[in-house]
Structures are given as C-alpha cells and as structure tokens.
Image 1 (cartoon, one colour):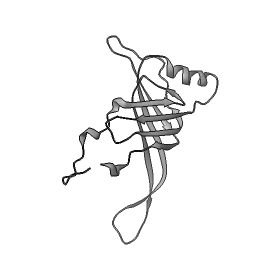
Image 2: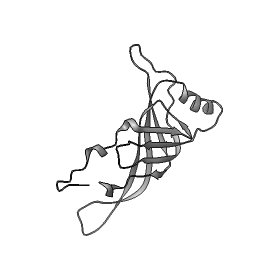
Image 3: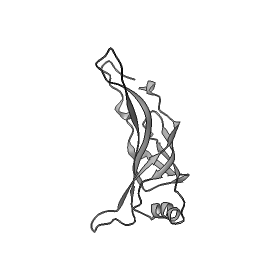
Image 4: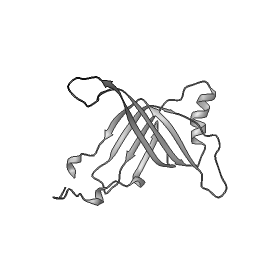
Length: 151
C-alpha cells in the first residue's frame, strides 16, 4: 500500500531476471531482454479559440527488440529457412514477467511479429556472443496483468 509520501514496498519492484520469451510456443531460453512499444502517430487538428495545437491519433506502430545470448543458430534457422523458401516469416511472440516477490505476473502476446533483420554472423574474440533482433508487430493481447490498486 502507498504511504502518505506516495512510497510503495520496494520488494514489489519487478526484477527482469524472471522474464521469459516464447516465439510461437517455443521458449527462447537464451533471451536476456525484450522491449515492445507502440508509437502513437498523430495528425494535427486545427481548432479555433485556443493557442494550443490539438492532435488526434491516426495510427499506431508496434516495434521492439529481442535480446539474446548467442547460444544456437535459432534465428537463422527460424527466419532464414522461411526466407530461402520464399515465405514471409510471421510469428507470435509472448513475453512473461513473473517475479515471485511482485504483486503478480505480467504476460502479453504480440501478434503479427515480423523481424526486421537476420544477423548471419557477428562475433569478436574475447567477447561473449549476443544477438539483438529488432521487430515490428501488428497487435497485442494482454494475458495476465498486475492490478495497480495493489500498491
């Protein structure tokens, strides 16, 4: 609960180490991070009687990035095979954050996921291998949410 200063129990802050990612229904165990955002595109709405510029949302764009440790050829197999066979790779991506100290679990399915690029090779001596794959998505469906009234 909030105290009079607006503080909350810091133990309820969600820790990213409890995150999980699934491409279609396969868990991506090597995932280290995921970010998905909606960009709200707006058009100007001329209006008399005010000096403020008014706006209306006219479209939305979903984009994000999946970060992984380089452990397997997962992305090359997943995307590369489809591309080489003339098929457009479209996926469902589910992100789940379930810190046992938090007030609940947050789980969201991203729909119509299309990865923007495929890294064929990227390595350097003395460095651990990682992959960062940007993507777009065309919709989302909340599966589990955390009620803010709990703080």
